[in-house]
Length: 332
Image 1 (cartoon, rainbow, N blue to C red):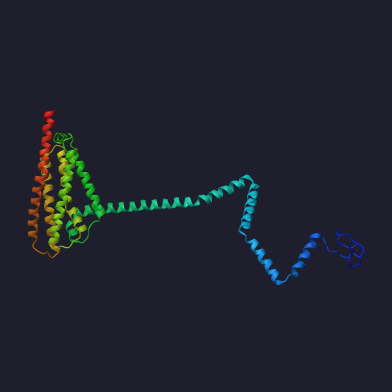
Image 2 (image 1 turned 60 degrees about the vertical axis):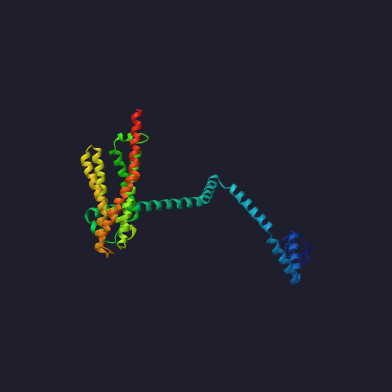
């Protein structure tokens, strides 16, 4: 190899000429090959260059090559993680677990939020019913006439709660007031069938009395809703229910005469309450015919229903209780 300036012989790995000091070009095989390829690329036609470019792009877009590259990167990442200290690896693992458990935590938080909202709604509804019950009893003892004359009525939830509470209290009072000797008149020797049948008769009697009252109110051309009628009916019968409970309690403390008197008064108030409603409604509405006719119809229908009730239910019940008592007495 010769110096391009003075022609002196030089080695291939020399940087400067030893004779003239000219800087020599590093003509290594790799450099020579790259220079040759560059010159060859310049000599190619534009069409051939475009074809080579498309081939190169197609090779780079091969999914298998990309996948292979991703695998290599993943392997390289794992190798890098393997070189991380143990405390940092623990931090990486904890972060990965945190990210993995994030959807479950979000779902749990959503469920907890839904439970909290349901609990809050239940508390609000319970508080609303409690406040309305307070207003109910305050209205019943202070100004029932004003409430019945107005369009205001209590919610169905409050009325249903009052009915359920009334049935529970009545059942407790019947259980206390009913003597255990009544079991001689039942088939199984206990007083439970008698109490259950009495509760059933009370429910049927209240339902018949209410629908008879509501039917006559509509017949008088008094336009009120069913919710308003139920609210007013329960409100005006508060006194009769209270007297019934007092009568049961007096019977439980062995005061039969006073208990019978109070219970009779409660029954009288129960049957008179619809007449009171007829009078109040007719004072605020234009009726189709005189209210006295509605009262007469109410009394006649009530007597017919009571007669049918006694003949079909009470009579056979007394007969069954008598036969059961006779069988238990002679068997002993």
